[in-house]
Image (cartoon, rainbow, N blue to C red; front, side, top):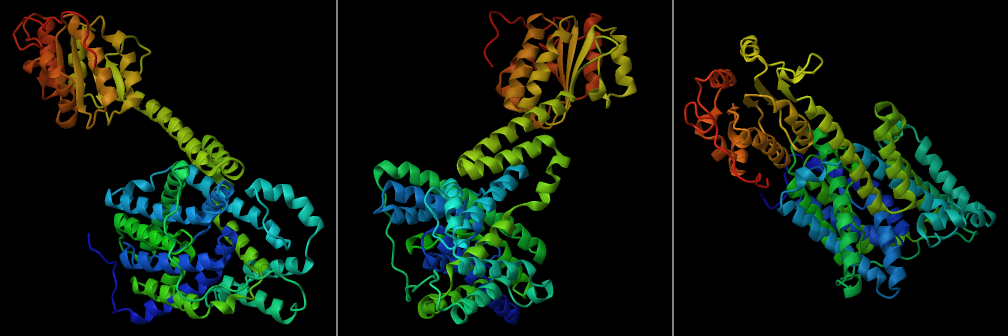
Length: 577
């Protein structure tokens, strides 16, 4: 794995323009997320610089722009609130320790090459979680829109305080917030192609506040420390170590999913492949650095990435240019942001929350699948009103249970016993049996039974195999067809072993047809190979049926390998699988 990201100079103009444009987009977002999180506007700026710098240097997607994002900010806001409530003096420092540990987890994910698996989550869960986060971000901005600081208690606290806040509304701050939202939502698309809407809203809102409402007592960002950020050493107590680890793991998973999904978008736009494992390492280094210097956690940002690509960015040089420009703001020009009204930043955050909500899928989910819609809305409700971690856990559990049930139903169609025991039995899964093979089964007159399996069989097929056992009880010879089974799961192997043990205990000739590769290896490791004997393994299904017919007519060889002798007796109880 190469150390650095793809940095080239053959697209210098495009990368410079892409980096400048991405920096312009990032500035108002970083300020808004810093204020929204409770860590301060400077934390948003530090995160935008450090995460963007390290992810651009060491990531695996050349055009990806990384910075604090809405989902990461919402989760980190909850982390800050809980840790400060538990330890007012060290809570904020512990929160930055969570950010550092988030980076460590992401580096570990990349080192273990888990990049391809991180995004393997049901879309209903991802969509519900992201939409819930968007709703949280909007609700948390209600007090700021009305001219008040965000009360304690998160979503429920903000909703409970809302009637009192409305009664004490600040009309001038509401006016600024409304103006900001109007610019963000109503700005023509042709202008957005050249001027980022968040920056226009920030400039217009600040200008109105300074030149027309300067006599009003408006809440503003205030002075932001200039110069390099101070080093934040890890702080934690033994009693709260478990909380820190869990919070960091949640942020690491969320940030990894967010970054890799954005990486897929970037790859589709540029037609360039990305290295997901390397990207996780870059994201982890960025979050470690951000936590060390008191910055917000972040991930790949869709808006910044798309703007970068549309402006001509093609290599990681654009990300480095963006980080350098934001660093100039942090080191030398931070005092220029002191007059920005908090109501304007609240309006920008509301627009981000609206954009995070998966409106397109929400409108169609019930038409696609009622069960999927139930999971989607359930995850949204639990995310907003209960707990972010619990929402993902419950959503994954329910989605996986429904998937397992559906998989079991599908795999049941791949298991049957031929010929059917009675005229109503379904033998559709045996549709690949040739006419000649069906004729051989007919010659057996029901005394030869074939347990026909097909497709990759994991634990969902075990119950279907067990349901076939009674159909084999009257057979005088049994053929097990594994010629179309590329994979045999452990649970299915044990179920098959148990079913065939019953056949062997009755001294019925048994032949396994077409077992190759992993299925045969798995059955042999269960000890089944010794019981069926060398002659019981047959390469072709037709040949196995011929041997079974010969066995019931007295001229065939048994599964034990001794002609005409029948299989070995199995003394004592069936050994555990």
